[in-house]
Length: 332
Image 1 (cartoon, helix red, strand yellow):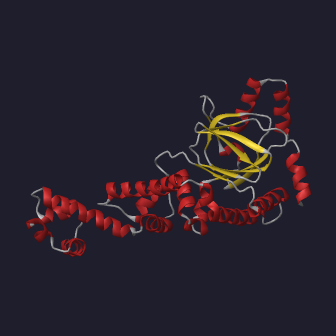
Image 2: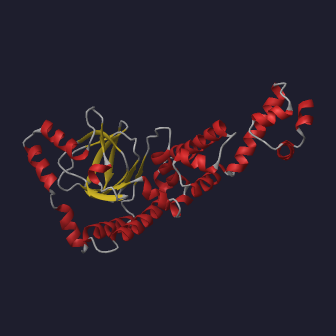
Image 3: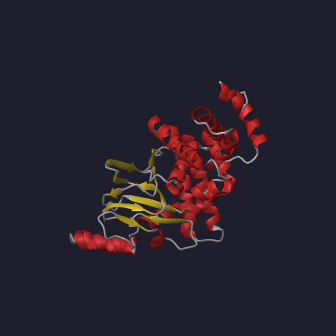
């Protein structure tokens, strides 16, 4: 497939678009809305509905590519996957968490799973591509270049693994970035050609696409958003350590956040600047100081209370952290 044939393919109306177009022209809005929800969702009883990946992806797929359906308004909804939208031509008008947004040709919108948004009906020239991405894809990509960037990796952490129901999106204004457009074109040609090695090639191009976005993200984001994304996951990790410091293990923490255990240690070090072991020791010693100052518990009881079983090890760690022994600290 070449660019000309790709352009023709994208401009063609799909079977669903033809159906929507007829209903749209006949102003059968209620029937149009029901048809849309039945096609995309397994759960649309309430006003806010969810687009389900099982309606659009095979079980074995971790990435799926879909042309955005034109001629139909998507009322307020969420996804159960991370979505990357690329506008191929025209523009796509959305309202995200109450804020109106226009994504222009060549731009990218990255949405997490908890964002509530609606999309105005696209005209025939408004062509956008949705890349649906499951958690499993990021388990793979985290171990490579994306993990080196605080903003994007933290965005994905919160979107897929976070416990705080974060609602995030990033609008990349990449209309003048030829690399972004070229990578997307290559992804689409691979997808529609369906040749051997297609999935490997698409993963590689998405990796390159993310890499290009990482280089430019500061141009498109406010310092407030950068700080919010960088700091929220740090808070979640520290809260977990503070609550589980007595018995915490790397595996338990990885299970809690649904991370790969090999990655969680790197994530903690990158975001907070200390290893998990350092943070646990720091928390235990801080708690020991509090108990020594504010209770009449014996040192042995303090050792047990904070989760140590080796008294000599506790004394050594306390001396290294505080500069004096627990007995000296209590006398002061």
